[in-house]
Image (cartoon, rainbow, N blue to C red; front, side, top):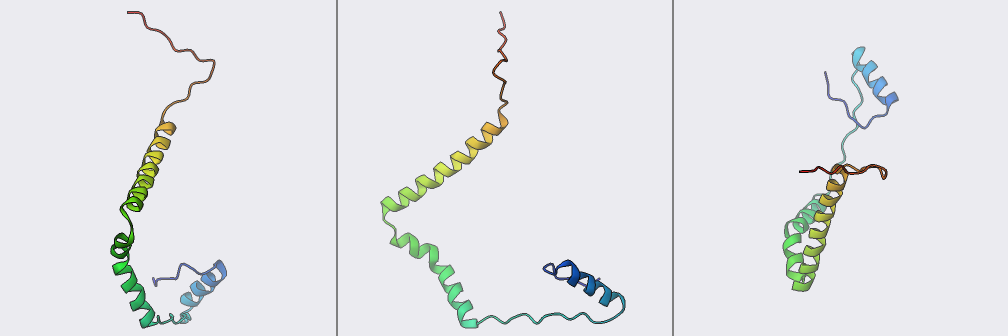
Length: 99
């Protein structure tokens, strides 16, 4: 079975399946070639991006970014804990156990 593109709508996919079943060669679009200069520039920026950003940040800015990251991590963990704890209805009373 040939690989079919996943971005076809149902009509295009149905036509392609019929064409394959009757032995016709399906028309495949030619992929666009990327501009090599643009690819190199993007790659170059990605390779030096984090290091260059770290060099330009002050220690206060780095500290602020780290604080925001930690708060987000704890926020997501607290949300998960709240979802796991059972919520009792207001009329339910806790039973006291006598020892």
